[in-house]
Length: 102
Image 1: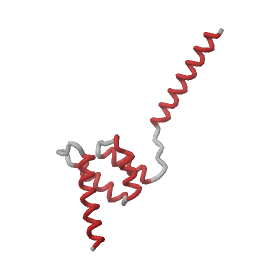
Image 2: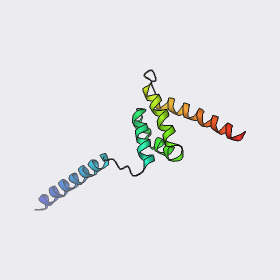
Image 3: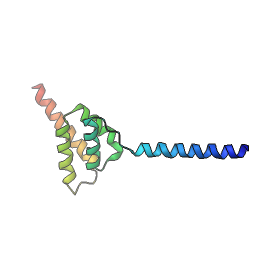
């Protein structure tokens, strides 16, 4: 009888983990900046850094970031679109900061 309960517990445990994995696959987008950040990660083929793009979208102009990501995504000769995006974004941000200081 004890072995029957152990098998049942193992099966329940496996079912629980299966449910957890399924829930993790579902999108939990609650705000616009989360959506924009995820869309940028997709456009730039850089899902590994989606949290970075979400943070950028939260702190800066979402439309401007998304526009830049879309323009970079259209370029076929760029191997690492995420790195290229960050280089262009940093340059734009630095240029904007230098204009504000004047």
